Length: 582
Image (tube, rainbow, N blue to C red; front, side, top):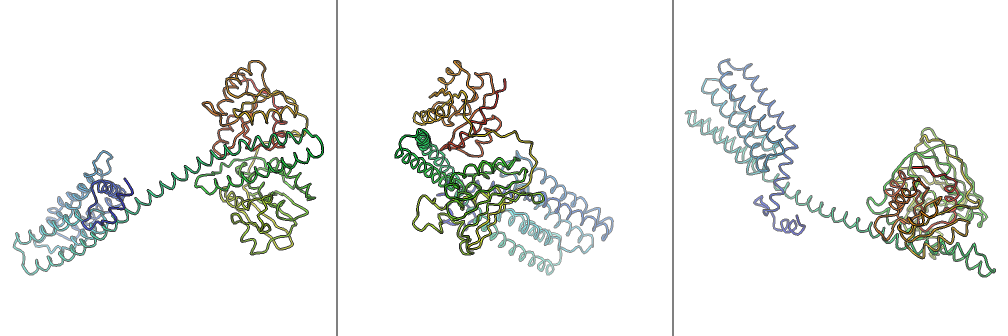
């Protein structure tokens, strides 16, 4: 069904209650579905109507008369029951459902008309009001087309008048009854026409809205694919730049070289943060771009990792960091929660002008209250209404890139909505700011002892990376840290290197030029080694879907651009893990 066809029909109109053939067939199917949805309510009501009147026949009329009209009542009831079961069958053609539906209605109308005349012929003054009830039921509730309901209603009313003439009933009274039935049918037919005309208009609008929704979803899907491609293509060289910059910093050299290397590393890190903010915000604004995958986990290790991550920047600013955390577990998405808290901490470092920054977590009934608090300049009520807006920087009118893009708190707000964690901001000018997040409490298993990531690294690592620049940069940094590295450009080379000497750890890029991805390559390498080797996956795609694939595979995903401190901490942990025979 094309949008052009729908718009053309909308412009042309449908006063005759007909669409072009293609649209008419779709609308007929739509009407059949409406009829089937109404059947469970309509059929029992119609059956109850006949049963109640059959009971009243025996209560109010002579037995002989009641018995004479009973077959007509049963005929009407049988028509309702048969129509109900016939229309519910899935193999009934589209045209068959409204025909059976209309036939049951017509038979009920005819039976009532016959019952009235049969009673009159036997001297029982049966009122013809039952026909009005049938008409009301048909026009108002059945949902048949204007033509079908009008044809059925007019026909059994004319049949009623015709039988009156045939049986020689009083002309004046019959004319009076005919006038009332004519008026009732006229009102019902006009109402049925208006109802169907409105239904057809609503159906056209719904189809156009549905096409617009499909187009919007397709556009969002294309944007997500573009975002994934851009994320990988932009992070790949940035990742290599960061690793080379870290390598230069660790190489040392004269004072000028060290100064330039340090500034280069800081600039690359800042560029990585800006890119991450843009990509995160874009993904969060797309429907379905980010979906939470909550599960229970221990909170303290995550908070300690974040504090360790921001500690160098805090020390450089002369800011005192404090962590207060009860030993507890929470139910959340750890990846999204980490992003949210990192943005809050970075926001405090960049904008709060504080001397003290506290990250705390405490139990409160069946919840855990997370707080990021500083003693900085604080925010007025007007500023609090603005801080969560996109690209809003209250203390950076010159748009200094070192202070970010103004997306940090906008991302925080959207992540809190995705996670369904209530977020509150409490602040006053000169009294600092407190961002309060509420998480559900959860039970978690005991945690293994933590390993210091600053210790010297020793171990054999097999690295699979098809990008030459990134491969050389990462291999050089790992060797600098004391690791033995076998760097391979493809899976075949990695399998060959595996036969020469078994590694203690596998590192693979996620997007490889050859068929398959990094997770599949890790699986192949583990099979060849006959061991469940610890493995890291380096990726620009940090989606929850990828994390769900990594969890059962016991693979740790690390986002690009790699943070050397984070990488070293993970390596220190994983190189202590003894592989398990598979």
